[in-house]
Image (cartoon, rainbow, N blue to C red; front, side):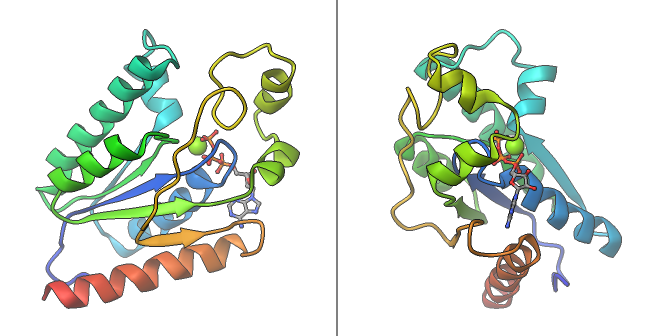
Length: 181
Ligand SMILES: Nc1ncnc2c1ncn2[C@@H]1O[C@H](COP(=O)(O)OP(=O)(O)OP(=O)(O)O)[C@@H](O)[C@H]1O
Ligand SMILES: [Mg+2]
């Protein structure tokens, strides 16, 4: 349970490889927040590209613009007491750090699942295509992923269950909110 009596807005930024578990974990947290009556919003990379940024590519420029739009929107919402869950590969460290500096309560969650496990899961069938050179600029295969050096929370979903990932994040948030009071 999230103990947020002053309804602090914040941004929970999930970064990691495709298939790492960002969306799965964020959806579970969103469900808890919804049941508790907290104000929350989800900004998911796939949905953002489908609904708004369909014209952006996966080269560096396209990715950076997509990530900046998510960061900008998350910042606006969080200023109004919304807990914003952002699930984006967001591969560039310098860009994530810049967004972090611009947002008041920013929590960087590194979903650090090994590439081999993500390839095995291949939940969208994209790794198979990327490994066959059918998709250019695929993170971890033909495009870089710059891991966070000091994330607020780090989880490896190959060794921790989804529920334990959620617990770890909620515990961190409760400690953080208590420090803000
Ligand atoms: N402990 C775990 N935590 C999260 N996901 C897990 C875990 N164990 C297995 N999985 C599975 O891993 C897959 C992760 O997929 P998910 O869509 O959440 O990844 P993602 O990081 O959002 O990828 P993308 O960037 O491509 O959207 C799901 O099929 C999920 O059920
Ligand atoms: Mg996802």
